[in-house]
Image (cartoon, rainbow, N blue to C red; front, side, top):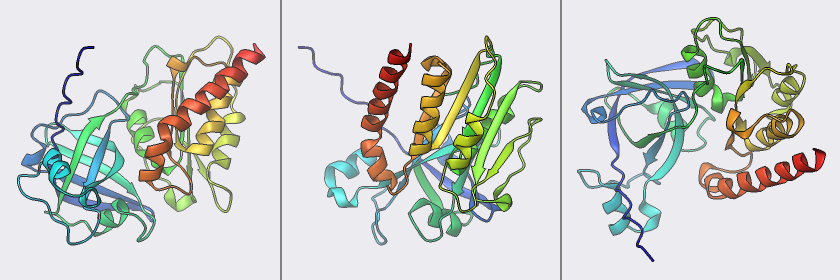
Length: 284
């Protein structure tokens, strides 16, 4: 049996905070720059993401130059950097500035509190980018749907689409103060959650949307996992949209931190996809 090729070591980028901005009460923008971004590039996908690296506790420092592989070889697991996944809101290749938007939950978590405290000159290390979705210019129309976690990718997609593209965009947020201005000619439908469960308003809005026969839709649907499960079923089973015309995934799951969700996400998605494929086949 042939041996698998050795995994290429992942080199972390090391960026410095250039500026910050509070976009809404629960959304913080951090712009990164500096020579540590010399090898970074993005722009192929509108859902590009990076894996931010945080020490798991105060007082833990790492030797320079920062070497993630060495850290994992030499330090105990409880001292390894913790990763948090964030969408690239924007990448300026001329200024070499990377923009990330953080959903804030007070002092809860790692990334949000870091973003609230971030000041120019602070350092942030990360891996990436990854990404798989860009709006298909040959589609007849586009569906974009998500909650706050998907807003950076939805906004990047809206800004990338040509003027006049047919788009239905739905974003669920806590309330009116969480709406954002997006540089596009699309009327985004802002769904105010209020006291309702996360995702309920989003599912209702997409379910009420007409899907014209014979017109190909390219859909991007991301957010809380249970909500995404319902929307995946709606699109795949009820509307019979081909898998290749969908980008559908749970960015997070209620009651789970990212570590727990990422550990279970692959199995969750595979199980849901199999269940819905079976339902679709039975209904055919």
